[in-house]
Length: 186
Image (tube, rainbow, N blue to C red):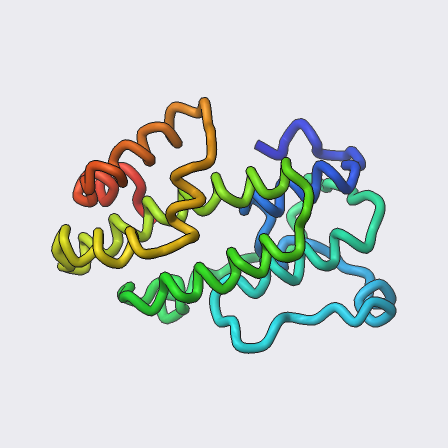
């Protein structure tokens, strides 16, 4: 999806949308200016163990005017089977997602970024529901967890024309978590 931008400079409003959409949430594929970080006191938020990189990138991007998109591979990512993202999911993960979601909503006042954040969390929620189902949680248990979450309610209420998001909403509303598990692996 980023290929059309290779070798070009992207305006910061576009970069912020990519971050809010959870497309550029990792820090390992970027080069940062240490002076921008120091001058603005940007750091990874404490107390958040999943998604802290998204907040760091968002805070950093708000302090710059543009970003160059390179096609060069300058980093080798090694997937770690012991990392947090590979651990068996439980109910506590929803709290982690909500912490980052609420922090993002507090930091962005722009409608396009708020919409992108809601729709990105719709993807996260559908994947999470599927992971809970694969981990053996019952439909009723998953529904009880998700239906009490303001983040889930906001994501489900966000208008969309994207067929995948429409399907995500439908499956979540119908509590079809087994289909979420098959269609939205993560």
